[in-house]
Length: 205
Image (cartoon, rainbow, N blue to C red; front, side, top):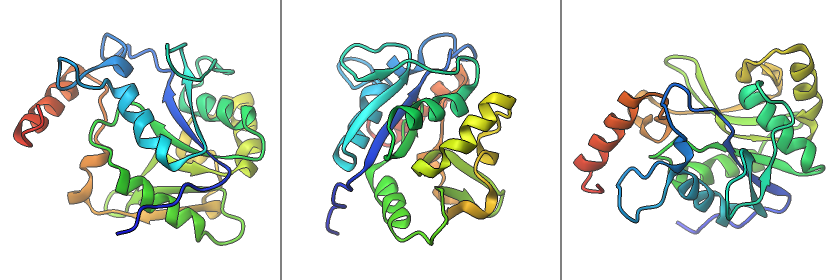
């Protein structure tokens, strides 16, 4: 399959601003395989770089990366995406959380292709699992026109990310439950242990 061409006007945004309080330490710097393996932040940035015009990290200062201080501390991903959109006028933001150890480039390429063919009026393109209704709002593209919605939600402290952009302005890519591994995220020590066991079973530890 030919590789997806780098699209014009698309910024890669790594969300790395969480306090990782549930995990107990900075998840962005976790090295799942240990040793000299890439940490989660480096892996996420490397996924985005070939597909976007540039990559920025929203959150705490991270050496070696272009970082944007969070404009809205305490507002979670809504604040992080608001920060990225506000700092990048005219650009769409391909947003990726840094805690997805099994995310792969083809998933992002499919997202970009769907976004390129979006109908008029679509402000957000994201994966959604029809069986559960769960939407992957942190593996998504947000158009510049979504900025006013984020500004409003930050002001009103409406912080449920899946509801920032009106439903009728969202484009969903369905995926089945058995295809959910790329969306596995690390929040708790138990998640980290599960991820390492999966890597071991895959022969990648």
